[in-house]
Each structure stands twice: as C-alpha cells, then as structure tokens.
Image (cartoon, rainbow, N blue to C red; front, top):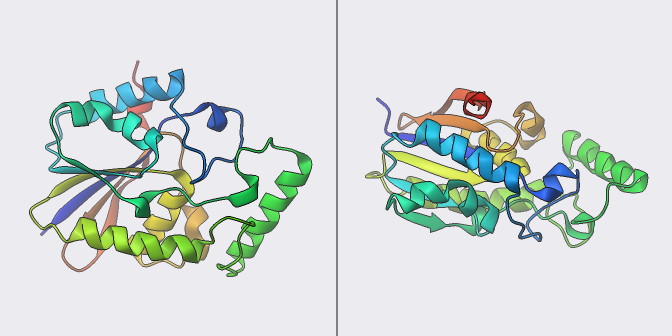
Length: 206
C-alpha cells in the first residue's frame, strides 16, 4: 500500500544555468525565459494531479517554477532543508579552467567518500544531509498529505534521492537531472521506491 507519493522536481532554467556558472544556496536567481517555459510545460502536464501540499526551498527559483500550482490555491511551505548545496567562494564565478579543476577535484573527493570536504564558505554533502533529514522529517510527519510536490535544486536533489533510497551519498551522480526534470517516489510505510526516474517527457511537449 502506498502511503505517500512525492513528485520531486528541479527548478527551471536560470541564466546562470544557461551560462554554466555555479549557482548554489548563495545565489537567489530568477528563472529566465526558457525556465518560465519549462514551468508552463510542467504545469500543463501535471495540473490534474491532486496534490495535497507543495514544499519548496527558500530560493525564489523554486517557487517561480511551480507558482501556477500555488495559484490554484494549493498550500505550500518553504523549507531551508531543500535549499541547494552552498558552493561558497565558487558561486557566481565564471567557468574558468582553474575553477573547473577545483570543481572536479571536489567531485573526486566526494566520490572517494570524503563527504566533509567543501569549498571555503560552502557546504559539504554531510552538511546538506543534516538539513535534508530535518526537511524529510517535516514532510513525512503529515500522513494526511498523500500526494506531495517538492521543488528543489540539482545537487541537493541528488543527495535527497540517495537519502530516501538508502544509498550512500557517494552515489549521488547516479541520479542525472536537467532543469524541471521529475523523479516520482512512493513510500509504502517501510521504504521509498523511485517509480519515475529522470522523467523529462513533459519538456518535449510542444
């Protein structure tokens, strides 16, 4: 028996996404024209789902991505636990060869299990895990909310999917994503199961 269904999406495109610039918790950016179009496409595809509640991060690009659902009168709540990982000194910086090397070095550290490593002023995967556990606790503490829409961020979403499915955080890159892609996860009271993996069909609609 399914007790709760989570529709987890990444926010729509921003100009920093388009330009390949690191955008974490410290960059409160807006959707660009393409991002707004993606939000329209997602709404058109899922507006008939009977969502009981919406959870978003405290960064405005997540609310902008699902605003049309909020406009239907659906209750929503902002949780800082759903914010993107903070990339610290690398946020908003142009994608230089030096920055790319630093980023790849950090990724290698994480894949090797060094999950406390972070950029200066930033967060590690273990830092994000702590606040995500609080967010999950909040979301799952409402059994009356059977169908939930969650809008969050790329790296944070990868970490959350590891947490929900009981995988080590070193496997975060096993969850590919693009802007406004969907992961649908069901909870049966015992375990979480991904029943729709990296779904972008709604973005291919005309």
